Each structure stands twice: as structure tokens, then as C-alpha cells.
Image 1 (cartoon, helix red, strand yellow):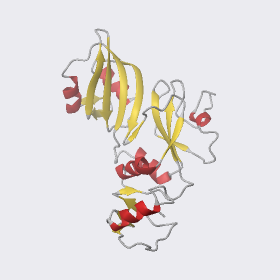
Image 2 (image 1 turned 90 degrees about the vertical axis):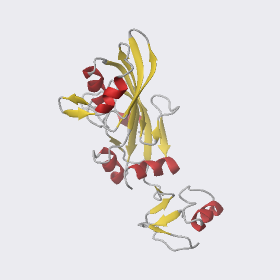
Image 3 (image 1 turned 90 degrees about the horizontal axis):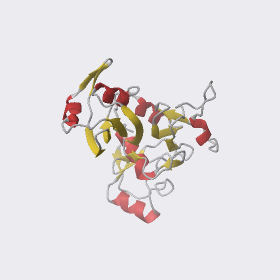
Image 4 (image 1 turned 120 degrees about the horizontal axis):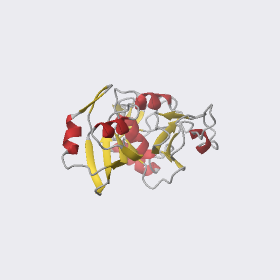
Length: 233
């Protein structure tokens, strides 16, 4: 069952079981050949969920600027559907990026995963690369970590790293657990550095990496397991 889910070879999976690194429905299993319900059993390896149902898929998309975060658009604007039209599954997007923001979006037909990723109580870490106006001062990261008050409540940033800077503009990497609309743009405007270009590069353990704009890839294995672990699955 583990081998069929892509965890590793049969021999490698047997070694994992003997080492006590596999659990079924929350209980560690060490005996080879233990019978489990293939349709309902919940398997974890090293604390990470193993996706057994190959009809369930989660996909990473590098969304281009100008594409709206919907599967169809009444105004005829480019939507997410065109990038997964060759997939047999009925996919839906997790969260949104505004049309002028590019980068990582997740699409899935896993309802439990989508619900938890979108739910504010799980607060999955998201990372963005932003080009902003002006030279970012050295103490801005500390200020953002302490919190900035916006019209709909305070927001704090987990980490801000300055990548490049000139007298007129800066490139910064921002990581935060917030999911409110336009949160990075509103935050940076509030502190005097409006965003001119924004790309989301990471959602939890899933990274944009070398994925080209407008392309997709299936998330699986340990990467998917780590994503599910982040939301308690």
C-alpha cells in the first residue's frame, strides 16, 4: 500500500514499518502484512500524511499577471481554468491572488485540504517577493514584526529580508501567516513603500522553485505530506 502510494520501493517501505515510522489511523504499526482498509485508513510516515487515492490531486500553478483567480470569468478575462483544461479532475483554487500579482497558486480536488488551507485558524505561512518604491530602511523588518495597524486590524510579518536596494526602489522577501485580501500591498503602502511588483513564491512547504510562468506541476510525496501536516491532516 505504501509502495503503491509512491513512498518508496517495497523493501524501503518494509524498513519504514520495522523502524516504527509508519502509523495507521494514529497508531504506530511495526508488523509487516498488517491488514488495513485501503479506502478509509489514514496513513502517516514520519508524521506526514500519505495520499492513497490517486483520483485526488493537488497542483501548483505559477499564475501570470493579468489572470484572475477564478475558474471562469463573466467578463471574459483570462482565468485559471485554461492552465488545467487538460486535467480530467474537477479542480478548484485555494485562496486568491489579485490579477496584478503573479506566482504560486494551489488547485486541488481535495476538499479537506482546500478547506484547511483557506481557514484562518491554520495560518499557513506564505512568502512573497515584492518590488517596492524607495529604499527600505534597516529597521523596517523589526517594525513589521511588532505589528502594523490596518483599517481591518493589525498585521504582523514573520520575516522581511531585503534582497536588493537602490535610492528609488527595493526588492524584499516577505513571509507572513496572513491571508487577507491585498495584505502585502496594503501593508507596504501603510509603511510608505508601495508595491510595484509582487510574486508569491511559497505556500507552506510548497515552493514556486523553477516552475515557469503559466506552467503547472503535480504536488506529491513528501512535499504533499508536509503540506497536509501543516494543516493537521
